[in-house]
Image 1 (tube, helix red, strand yellow):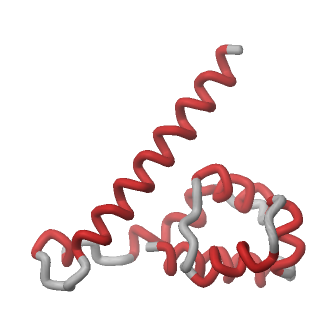
Image 2 (cartoon, helix red, strand yellow; image 1 turned 90 degrees about the vertical axis):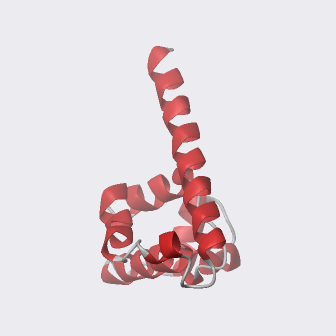
Length: 110
């Protein structure tokens, strides 16, 4: 999942002619850490994803739609050998989204 998101982010970044350094500066992280996001080595939070989408002038959905293109059936059958890893990645993304939603709701109430 991280690799799919990373490759999508990289494609959008290069289409806008931004360097990794420019995006990393906008995010307030090192270029190396940002490069690990694009390579799929580091997980990406919804907060970082939203900042990347803002800089690239796209929606978060434009970035994450690549996840819908991957067949999500293999983990159910357990035939791919790393079904537990995929489930944990989905749970991480769920809780990141839930946390971001709560923060946005709180911000809107204040």
